[in-house]
Length: 465
Image 1 (cartoon, rainbow, N blue to C red):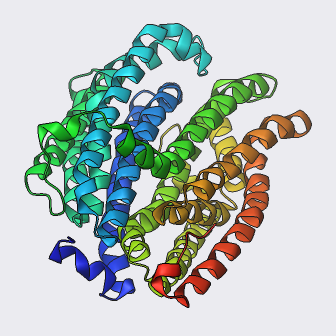
Image 2: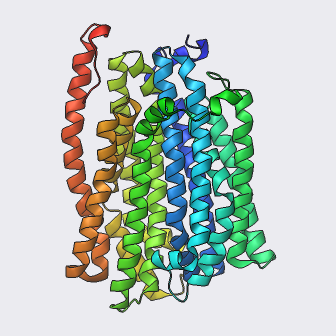
Image 3: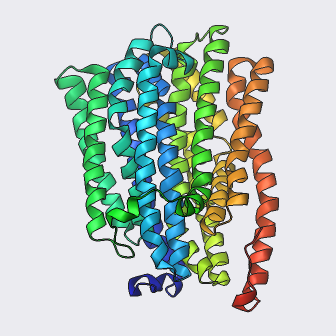
């Protein structure tokens, strides 16, 4: 039986629904980004570009954790939405409970890996003699909170799918505000340096976790019992299949970051910039890239409950309309971002400090303009993969979510052999062009399949390939 409060997903105007769900989702993701970005800004201005490089070294570890939380969170959210549309609500509680359990266990494994890996792991991720101690001080504090931070992120996705995107946003916002307030106090007033940034981060994350956990007593479409937390492969398999696209996207970011960190140190050392300036610039550019990408992902992920419900209810015309709106708004947002990055790169780079180093600023501005020049294509390609995940098409979503990033790794290995250290940044637009071309072919096929399904009686509908 579908809860009455969920039926509006199949009846209300899709444009109004998209606005209602996507805006809080975008804000939630931006707020989540702020944890790392705020640290970056205060560390950059308080410690310098070496501090930024150190936080960038820890970044891949936190992204692995983020990916694990999305594997279970986005998977459970998509499963919840489709189950509501199909009126199979009895499947939802064990899916939510298993997602929480395995997200927590994933955090434990990643934390232990970070602690046991020690300095060797940090060097593998690109730490140099100048950044190793800073990276250690920052990372060893963040690891402690990782299991609960992952559960919080998993719950945020489930809360949005349950029809309360504003609650998820509020929980994230509360933690982020505490982090923003705590950073300058811990870094400058208490003189704790990079350790202060880490403590402010985990305090904010803990508050967000508590607020998300409290939601379970007021959820709309499910009520959890202790029995639901029993590991269940029959529930976990479809959840992880639907969340695989999000997980692989995050995992590919880790691989890209590690590969680029190593390449930037290698080719930077052969240039006038040295090893640390290219690495520091890349960290800042990736933060700006994340902001725009998270807005695009927020549009698509916010639409996920609406898409999943209507697809489950076989209302394919509404699904097609949603796809058009998702792509349209992604293009508009990214076009504005591209204009700003190309016209005002010094402003974007200067936000993260080190303005007194002209060599660093010149290199960062040049590479910002190159790396983010085709961000429209990046974001459209990513939201198409999320859309496929929303309709339960895991077989197509997972490869598409990886496509651009795999191409980027290949081009990143090739380009600097011909263009030097800046070639690493030219790899991004090259990967974007090829990835969007392949994605377009897949989405045209999906579009036509949805159109054919809308013309068939409901019992003859099938999944689009």
